[in-house]
Image (cartoon, rainbow, N blue to C red; front, side, top):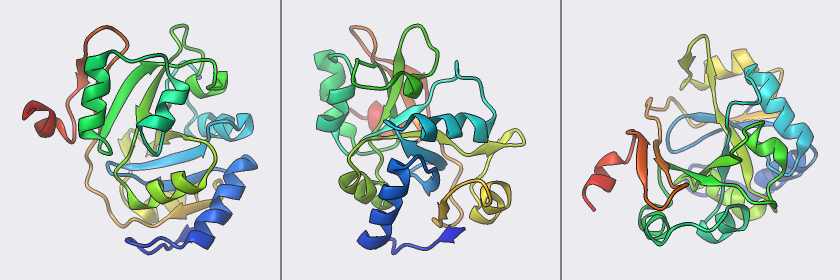
Length: 205
């Protein structure tokens, strides 16, 4: 089911209903500031399990944690280096994934079977997701929409593939295929694992 939301002022009532479904183990597809993503409540074992099944991926494959802001993200990760914290503060919200060490507050299912317990933190610059994250009590676990060996940016194609298997798809139109820039912040410094959208902003600092 494709759902329409106002791009500047998403309907709070509809997002409230989505939040309730997510808390009950539901899964939705949302447009992000990069590509479309499947999202579930990070505290819902049933919801996160559905993400793995929907994409048919191994639990050794990491997922992302979507947070409203740095303050929220800090509740679920080990302490960052000063350099990483300053960078995160300067460039978020935005199209960046910060690889950090998860702490005990994040359920095991959200960082899969990785021995190192790392998680990719995102603070997306998306009106839909920012508004939902402000309403929802927990961060969201997410993974990009990907099938037949390619990312899917057309909501109609997503509906054909996932429409009967998710609780709803938020229509964000056809997105440009731009992946997030991935930054490894698990050590003392910062290393760029993938150059993607927003890399020019980092290079200009």
